[in-house]
Image (cartoon, rainbow, N blue to C red; front, side, top):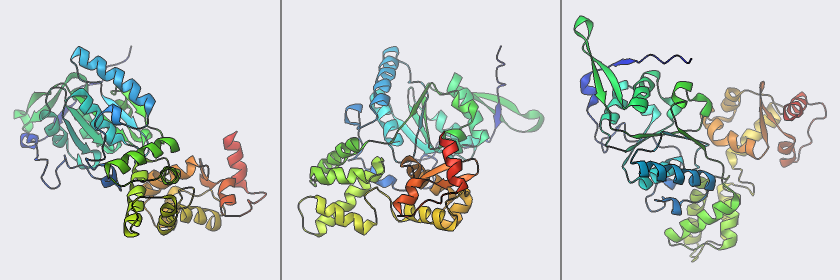
Length: 369
């Protein structure tokens, strides 16, 4: 028989429960933006309902069922965890879920919830059925998580008022709500937190066709035409990521506008991508720098993430979240127990011949088998 987890009593000052103003600078409701967030969070570009949401058809279909069932029972949607690389629309999907449920959404992120009182203030300010969205949920502290556990399961949490022998426990009730967590690092989400999510969905990279449809939709919303060939070329270079596709289209629009063109065509895209130093595969300057350092300075690897990040001059988290996942996806880098190694495809991309007796390549073949 599974032993039930012991209920935690969290200690913090009662005045920490005052809900902050969303407009206040540094507010826990003012989510720390990720690079490029402004490209996807514009209200005019964000889909509001599932019928406007492009891609992720399997996830959307099951969410439609779960939401319809929850609304029929007049209950909140089960707590939902969204997994996947940055830029794939986790925040957008959370907003769509709230809209489909007909409730309000409060948006925050793990790094800004420093104290137990921060999340307690958010919880006590929720109304029946509201959605609380926490981006980068893997970065929550243990104390904050311990406030969430009973709130997620039983819609209450206990606080300790005062200190010493006069201290007393106070149970705070929470309106039934839905917690939606988003993370780029599934392995960093603690097991006790992960098991409390009733719905877990992994968001995959978009296909070229899906991104082409997205670009054409954004073109219509921004009232700047794009030819089918140009939309397809942008989609091919967008790394399977909607955020990148939207950013690229807006830069191509800039090029076309300055050139006094009435639309974005294929010639505009080709010249614009040269200006951005993005090649036909979607690799940019930093991608190529990572590969060149791995191949030429470290003989193809293996090399640790921290060492690679220092050599490139970027933060390790940035390399891991933004660049490495794409390079692995297209088969240029592999992760092994000893570190990162370059694949045969990476050598061929630079016109280099892979070493015949490269132990890293032997390890890669063993890893693949």
